[in-house]
Length: 459
Image 1 (tube, rainbow, N blue to C red):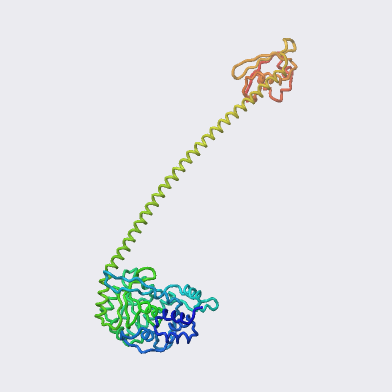
Image 2 (cartoon, rainbow, N blue to C red; image 1 turned 30 degrees about the horizontal axis):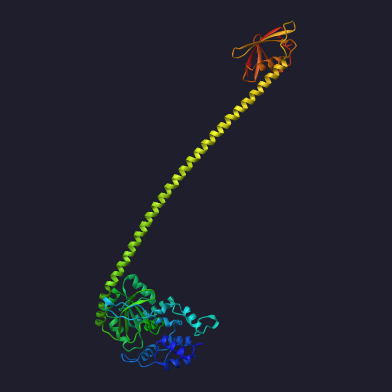
């Protein structure tokens, strides 16, 4: 468990107050609840202390004076217990720029939940109901505060001053990075006696405002608001009016180029800003050239990638075409082989069928020849028959007069002189066709005895 001395040390380190008695009173008033005390310190009414422009006052007196609101409580998102990170160092530009060196913390945008959890681990978080009682300013809340500041500034001092952006500090910093400009920061203390004159005379100077609007991105914040108060702690503002010139450095870090504390005339401010701009010009030019080189390199890589993809797609298209052509040739070759195989099979089948048919015909001729029996010898009951074929060939044979006409057909079939089976035997004088209806008649009944001359007529 963390004791009271540790809580007091944390509270002093987080809030920047150096007076241990004042810190003790604040913690005791909040029941030594560190998180509640810090939230109350940044968002609720505190007793006002006399404000002075002297640089010789102790830091705790200045903080108390500048943290007291003018009238009534100021409602703002409560910061999380991340104030330890506010004091993290931020890289500074030195050397050729001849500017301010040192460390400025920007831990304002680290998630409050993470730090609340970290403090809860060491016993500092309230953690009731498993929820953190405070959170850092969200982007929308930071932008709302910035827009409120711009509206209040223009309502009180008019629109002739710098064009303050209505967005959070980190967004304004990113805007300056994108525009390759420095960020002009103005922290407004509404209770400071020098603030009205500085805003009304210096910031509203047409020459100064035009120079700032042309060469800087301007961001302003009220130290009574959450983000303005945090920025005053981060930039360690000790006198007001307070201005600073910063530029992005690395992640969660900025480079503080110049602090301007206390009242300044338009001429003094213009001289300071011109000097800072001249000293930082090489850095901005180098950043712009580096970004252009990166864009050119990226564009070149994109063009090379596009050319490579086009060449690759062309190669792939040619390869697909080659593969398709090869597959087509293989398919045609396979189809040709299959066709040859089918033709060969058809020829073999036709030959086999022809052979079978010829065998059947030979067998039929043999059977019909056997059915005729032996040729009879000449006699009164024997008929002499002459058969002429379409080819001119002639055949002659003797038959019994009582043999049927079908025996003549069997005789013609047994000779094998015809390639067809559909034919008729016909006599010329008189012309008589001995078709199917007469095949059962005997030769004698058909008038073909004792001799006949017939010819084969194909159907």
